[in-house]
Image (tube, chains in turn cyan, blue):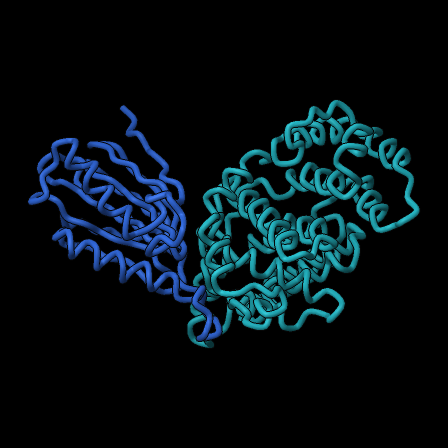
Length: 286
Length: 160
């Protein structure tokens, strides 16, 4: 079934020009952050070369969520005041908005819904990382949260033409929506997302978050904690209906992932309960 | 004349009169739509959880939001005898480990909603709950009908 669609998707992903693009400066900054010897000045120069991004970055940096009340007038100031990792997160928000802030037809998401969902997941994932004393993962899970569903933007048109069969397949085979995508379309939105991140030359840990956010149990050991945090944050936001689409809650909440995050039942319920406050925060940078 | 569409966010409660349309998007949350067919007025409460723990925001919880919704309608001159309720939402993750309470939130929201409505003697005349679908619901105060859009499929509930 749907063999012609499978073939078409293969052609699309083999053609890098057909996939969303990312300014080179973003890739360089993401990779710079992982380099302990990186020079602040070099980063600032790198960012400032792109005028459009710089304007957006300053806008986002001055949101209450990031600035915490301080005025940030330049990229240098942002780096000094907020630190490199926060600035990297801000750059990612500024750069991915154009890819994610649009209607996603096959998943039945109106303009802004996918963007809202991804921003909320990013913020919740970061909060969980900090609360659970995994501060070293905070910026990674934030970036991963922002882009975890990027594959949906490419897969959407094929989901649109097969939606009824996909839902039917989840019910008939008792599988998740992502598994139904794999079965009927040959790829799921996680795999397509990973292919996009490879094109962008984003680090492997981010690729793993995107690739395994619904399949946390299969994530490589090296990234299991980060994947698990995004998995849980994503599930909580889906349950709260934040940017929930036609695929609804046809996914799995992994017990193993919950264990990997170290969250207990009352903590999980607490995070679900604060989603309205989370949304308010998300709106600041949307 | 265009009809006003009002979005009701997570943990919000809004009341309005004909011909306003109240809209909300639901996952595990439950949307409680109460309508006074005589006054053509109603309200929608979008609750996240069944009952409060140590949170003070009554709109978040079925246990406190439903009485608050009824109270607001009564204050606007609605009569309990003319009120009926429709409820939607309360979905759960398609799969989850059975010992995970997070997986039961949808179900608990539905049962608490029913319990409170029964206590308050407001009959439920329409229900679209459970499963694993996300729902977009439109509550038309013109005649109290409820449109539920879920998984690319639309359903209307007309009874008031």
